[in-house]
Length: 577
Figure (cartoon, one colour):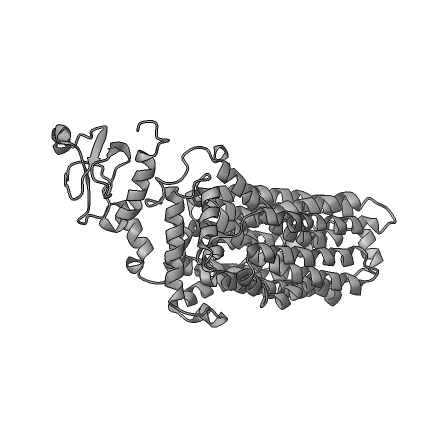
C-alpha cells in the first residue's frame, strides 16, 4: 500500500484481532443494507415481470405503462434529491438513513396491498423518494467511518452488495412464482423488501456518526472519541487518531476558506468542474453501458432469443445475479492492488468487444432462428456482466466519493444520483419501446456509446489508489505540490531538508559512519549523521528509539512523529521500555 505517511500507524495485526475495527465493520455492514435494499427492489421489478400471476393481476402492463412502472421509482428519487443532501449535511448521516428507511417502509406497505396498477406505481414512487435519502447518506457514512486501510475495498463492496439484494429477490421470485392462482406469488417478495429498512431504522442509533460530519459541526471531542474507539482500538491518543483528526481539521479549514457551500460551489472552481465532469459521466456511463437492458428487461431480452418458459427465465435471472455478485465482490477486494483507473479501462474495453458479439448473435438468431445463436447470446450476457462488474459495480460509488472534498461531498454525490436517475428514466421508459420496434438493431447504439465511454475514461479518469480520503479529493485541484497534505506525505517519504535527526550515541558512531544501524538510537535535537539509514524527526531530547522504525523526515512532520515516538517507544505498554 502506497501510504508513506500512514503505513506505520495502522494496525499491523489481522483486522479481526482489533476490537475497534471489528465494531466499525459491523456498523458499516448496517449501512451496506441500503445498497442491498436498492438491489432487491431493482431485481424485484425485473423478477415480477417474469411471474405470470403478477402479469395477470395487473393485466399484462406493456409499452408506456411498463416503462412508467419501472421508471417511477427514479422519478420519486429525483423529487427527493434536492432535499437529501440538506438532510445528510444538516442532520447527519444516521438521521438521513433513518428518514429514508421510514419512508421506504411506508412504500412497501402500500406496494404489498396494491389492488391496481395505479396503487402499485404510487407505491414505487414513494419507495424511490425514500431511497434517495438513504442512498445519499449511507455510502458517505461507510466511507467516512471505514478504517483507513479498508476504506477503498469496503466502499467498493458497498455498491457490490446491490447484487446481494438482487440475488435474494431473484431467487425469492423464482420460488414464489410456483404459488399458483394466488397474488401471494408477488406480494411475498414485496413484503420481504421491508426487512432491511426495518433493521436500519432500529439499529442505526447503535452506530457512530461520521467523525468528519461531527468535526464540521464543531463537535471535535465527539469526533476524536469516535476515531479513538473505532480506529485507535479504544485509545483517543493513538497516533493514527491524531493524524486523521488533524487531517480532517486541516481539510475543513481549507474548504471553509471558500465560504458558504451552495449548489453553485460544485462548479465554482476549476477543480470542482473537473470533478463534476467525471461524476456526471459516472452517472450516465453506469446506466448507459447496456446493462439497463438486462437489469430491467430480462424478460424481453430472453424472448428475443426464443426463451419463453417462466421457470427457465427466472432461473437464468437468479444465476446471473449470483454470478454478478461473485465478480463484483472479487473485484472490490483487489481495488487497492490494481487501481481504479486500470479497472475502468479493462471494464470498458471488455464491454465494447462483448457487446459487438452480443449484437451479432442476436442478429443471427433473428435471421436464422438458430438455437445455437440464441444460447450463445445467454453466454455473452454473462460475459458482458463479467466485464461490467470489474469496475462499474464496485467503483461507481467509491470513486465518486473519493474525489469529492468533504464540504461538497453530499451535494456532489446527489448530482451523481440525479444523473443516474435521469439515465434510468430514459432506459426504463425508452428501452422497452425501442426493443419492441428495433429488436437487435437497438444494440448498435450501445456499441457506439461504449466506444465513446472508453475514450472518455482514458482521457479524464485519474488514479486514486493509495491516498487518504482528504488527499484523494485534492487530485482534481491542480498542482498538488502546493497542497499541505501532499507536502506532508512527500516529506515523510524522505524529502531531504534541514531537520531534527536521530543519531546513535558516541559508542555507536562508528557503525553510523559506516552505514551500520545500531539496534537503538538516541534522539538529539539538531544532531546529524547522514549515513545513519533510519531517523525520526522529533524533539524529545535523549530518548531511545528502535532503528527498525526510524526514518528521516522534515521539520514539517516533526510534531506528528514526536507524538508517534512517544506512543510507540515511551508508552508503559511497550515491552522493551
